[in-house]
Image (cartoon, rainbow over the protein chains, first blue to last red):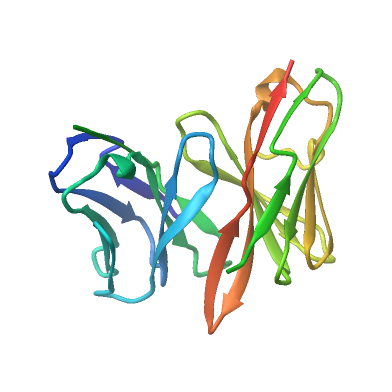
Length: 111
Length: 117
């Protein structure tokens, strides 16, 4: 059974600081997704990572994938308040293309 | 980009009644859609996979007679919560899968907040 874990579950950080969110998964997968969710809203797609060593960057967010370690990271650079949200990673099951979500990381950026 | 429309955005219903939630892919055909539920401050839990023209596949522990899924066309899937009870109150989100250039992309609806009183 595919399990996806994120840490930390909650992250409170000061504006301007850097931090990394980790996403571990338990079985082989060929794709990993990162999403953002604002309170009471649906999911916004951030990144799709498809191969070992893939790195993608958008603004202050950078995501990477290590398929051998079954680990993805979402790095936040010089955080700003607008980044406050919950971030989910999701892993695609190779057997049936379902997406299994991680536990989520609630990020709060304060001045 | 791909757009998935989900209605209603929120609904309040009385215990024992049924509620239907619609999920439409607006600018692409989705042979496969997924239904998730999300409790406050928790992750998304996959409930079922909806396949056009065939029966839905439910995840373990999800009652198929309570959560009826119909995927009658390539652009519409519906989730009906039958005989709703307060414990069914949750945020329900649909997702439509689209294959673009050999890669699967998943577009999510705006979600439906169901409150059963």
